Image (cartoon, rainbow, N blue to C red; front, side, top):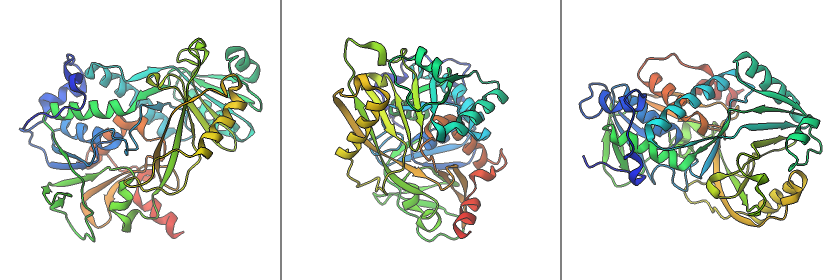
Length: 411
């Protein structure tokens, strides 16, 4: 099979023999004796799942309609945050595991994909519970952190205005990941290790009942496998409407980039951490962004969105809203020029937990998704989790079950 590469020379760098990804090149591939698995979706969940299944001895086909990290993908865009600040310990531990795997993979890729710049969660009155719980979880998991009062914040970050802020928790080992690039690097590693990649859309299965022998693609070819893993982000809802219509909401999200002055480095990576402002809405931002500008996003869930045909033109209202926030929190650059804006989407479950479970009527079909705006960082850890579940090497996690969503819908 002709090797497909997504980042040109990305695999030209030496791969260390003591890494898990390097081991995939010798432990799997065309001569593997494990089951045939087709993974649909090459984003944060699907790409890492395919690579992990390959490493564990499966024969794997990875299928994606527009390619890893494409502009429609939830995993697209330059940067995504990775942090362990959560109120639920399961995600604290998963994020910690994911960071270890990201760093290990970075070495294997021969490219830097993680930028450690710290993350500051600032709380107004509405966000104090989150900050306090995150700090307790950090202490329980021995994760380095600081709890900062307003006076300390003002001394440490004079380029910000802290009106309304009462407390913050700082996680120095947090940072951001190069999202689109990493998706391509994972796909490259998968192909280099002997995986099969097919760029094509999968068609809906329809009304299934029993074991599925093959799936049909948009070009009318078929892919046969022992097991199928659908990890296709916002498209999951549309491929399985009978199962996921009420369990997943796909929403339109706008990201805005402002251009800071060339002679003012106070807002650069290294001078300012990633920040999040917990108030009636959650605003967040990332300095640096591969020189794309000062990134700011509103975590409030937007209107329903079609990830295939939806209009991705940013709105004037969204840009004005972001600038109004900048006037409150970053007043000295509030009038900075808009340099870029983009529209992506969330695929949100009602409780924000992931989905990793079998289709209720097809025992060899797995559904994996529900990233809910925080899934990307967990990529290698959730891929490991999904692969082990599919291969029967790990017990089910109730919080990731379809049953809990069905109970919520019926309750």
